[in-house]
Structure formats: structure tokens, C-alpha cells
Image 1: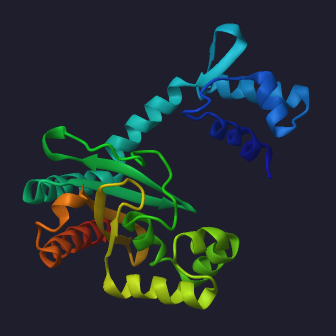
Image 2: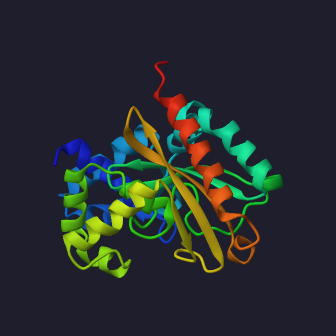
Length: 248
């Protein structure tokens, strides 16, 4: 692992549960030498990625806020997806999530809700989704390249089994292949009790990029024509895929 990678890994320590760290705690957590740990903290602070607060402790810095804003206004998939998501909200009255896959992390990057009334969804923007629970994640995983799927299965067998996707590779492959062939995935209460979702994949030049998910209370799910709702979600996801695949 390079020095830069080690230094940037410090940022992963800052969580909702523990948003404040001292330089000493950071040094001990990574088993850095004292000079190295303090140097990394100083460099991150100078770059604005960390900010010092009282007592010599540190929090996430202002540069992160600036970068987050830049992503929101300039990420092509968000810029292209937002009006399509707004239209989907207007058609259905449901909340719509746009998610991206980054290596082995799946994150919601944008949300549209009716009248800006968002539901209490646990895995909102910036919180990594479980890879094998919820339609949002499963439709992405189902469209990964075979080699990536094998690596994922080998490293996360217990998670796969817990999600009911198979005890061995053949069972997992069968479950995932069905989702891929269907072209969509529906889940009920897998992450949040009382919420259901329909998700369809988003591709960029035939490579899986993310997913588009329609979220609604499970109690309302039976009110809708599920086939029609699924087609609407798939069409919206296909439109985003086509637009982000076009040369800029």
C-alpha cells in the first residue's frame, strides 16, 4: 500500500458514530510511527481534508464539502438523471434513487422525492449499501463481469448466504443470472421494514454503472400495476444509460 493510500485511508475513520479523532488515536489505529501519523494528519489538514477543532482533535474538513457540491453539480450521471428522475416522481408519486457502483461499494448519489418529502430510508446518499440486500444493490451485482462476480462471491460467502442468494457458487450464479435476465429486481423490506423497491440497471457503454430505484411503502405496492411500474422504471434507466453512453 502506497503512502498516499495509507494517508487517504485515514478519512475512512470518520463516521457518524465517531466523527472526531485525535492525531494520537489515528496513529494508534493504523499502527503508524508517531512522526508518520502526525505528518499524515498535518498534510490532510493543510489540504483541507481534515479540520482541527478544540482539544487538538480533528473532523472532516471543508474541502470534502466543496468536493461534494462539485459532484452534485457536475457528475454526468446526476446531471442526466435528475430530470428523468423528476419525471418518474411525477408519474408515480414515489421516491426515486440513483445509485453508482464504485469498486465494491454501492452508493446513492442522488434522490428525488414528491414535494421534497423524502421517506426515512436508512441507506441515503453517501452510505454504502449492503451488496446483496435490496433491489438497488442486487441489480448492480447481477450485471457485474463474471470474473468480478467470482471474486465477490469468494470474498463474501457468508454475506451471500445470509442474503439467501446461495450456499455455493452454482446457487449464487443461478440466482444472480435470473435477476440479470429479468432486467429488474424487486425487494420488500430488505433494508427498511415497510418499504419496497423496484430497481433497474444503468449502463455506460455496456458496463454496469449503477441503478435506478423506485421506492414506496409496501402497503401501497399492491395498489399499483406492478408490471407497468416495472416497465416505467426500466424505460427510465434505459434512457439514462443511452444518454450517458453518448460521446460528450
